[in-house]
Image (cartoon, rainbow, N blue to C red; front, side, top):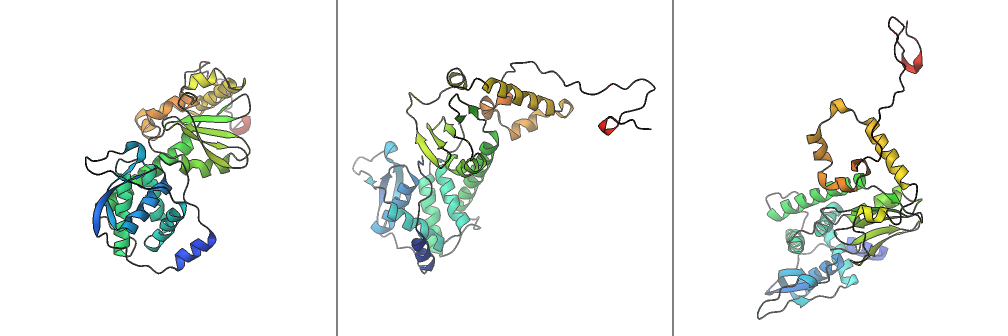
Length: 315
């Protein structure tokens, strides 16, 4: 699971990478090896650097916490090297455009069981082809990368739409989510820009980490299992602002009043707003007050003139 954003690089490194001539990847002539890394994206890029430095293809690439060594061979533990990671990240632009490179980052965040080998195989195929392979749909790795990238984009879009903040007594707006994929690094720019005037925290309950914005910058923050928020009710009962229940009632009332019962289509509704998100949506919680239609229209008297826009009589 990623705990950082994309590798940083200086302007000089970017210029040097762009100016470097495209060349074929080294032949991997040595016996394949098992590699282990710290689970970060920079760590995976460091593994790719070591693959070509050692000229040994990977049998497997596993996070350290999930390593399963063989009877006679132990995996090679690769330390994260930010300089090597940035060099690999920049070097990928010689063989693919920025969108294709970003898709590899999305594949990593997808937490797919074979994500590490998939990133390696895609990058290696592009380097050996000497060109962008994004439209080579006859290649199984290309198709798999495209599918995962599409799923990540869909989940990112849903999280940007379905996050519901609650205000705490100290002025912090917090939200709890459980996305299918690790999308927090992808939604950080959206919420940083949209809610730049307030402190907020978005907590990923499934992965026990979150994004925290302090009015100046957005950071990734870790939570211990004992201190991480577990239930909406547990948080609401202890630290919420005293006006938060009113805010929720107002939001639910707005949701109910804009709803059109005659156009109700639950099948379509569940497709656009899957059930797994409902427990964190204010509008899907039990109503503290029963819904009452707004009676703000003057009844038309029998035989009297009809009322048009603005309450003016129509002749």
